[in-house]
Image (cartoon, rainbow, N blue to C red; front, side):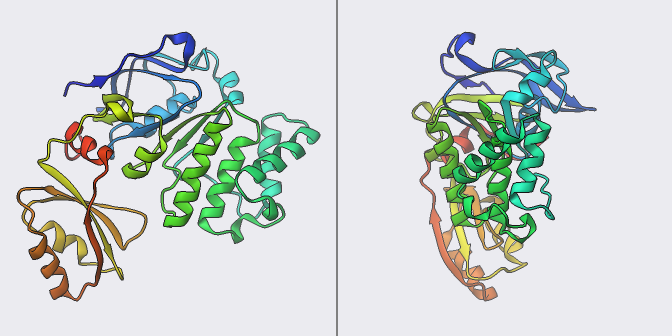
Length: 324
């Protein structure tokens, strides 16, 4: 597949600069000679199917994985030679971040600040600022394990803010959150960019990234198939379509029923077990038959709406179904 890219700024303006980066896990190739430039001050989205190489790329940028081939510079520093300096200036939140559930929010953030060698006075100020930024100032002395999942994810964001990094990297930060918590967390990403941070975020929730990001990189099977602004995304070819399916209650038969319908290619869970994205061939899907099959099973459908997101349509046209 031929990638689509726009003119990139020179390296002096790039917070992230990647040349011919490849990475493999045994015989499985995760990244295949990619080139990428991300300028400072942007909120940049990274999207792609499962197995496309997103997490591998983000871990390399955070210096958690060593490069196997190619050149990677973060904030003007080589990730191989300057990893310790990079970690002092980068904040990284994994898709499933560790949380010290027996600590209070203050204790957890104080511990993380100490790891970054901040003084006691610096940590006190930084913790107050970080909790204020994520909207948890009143939860300073609350035990992390007693907080909601969304609040715990906000504590995770506060953790990567304590050392005041210039670059923030978030890998699927909204995974598993309810709709309100997800919307609030995404808005926080935008706020961080607005105060001068560079933010790189990966997500499967394409419509939200489309509304949130200044620019997008689409990865497919370890290769970049698009890199540019939202306005530069190609339109879908019209052959594929996405529908958002929402149910009143969970039903274990839902996947079997929907995927057995003519024209249905895939089902992707959204924020809960009662919300799905249905990917299908537009010319083959018979919505009435699909809905009738669900009703006959006794499944209550609250909505079944075709998505009109430009990013969803472009994603379908740019990427290939399945993973290697």
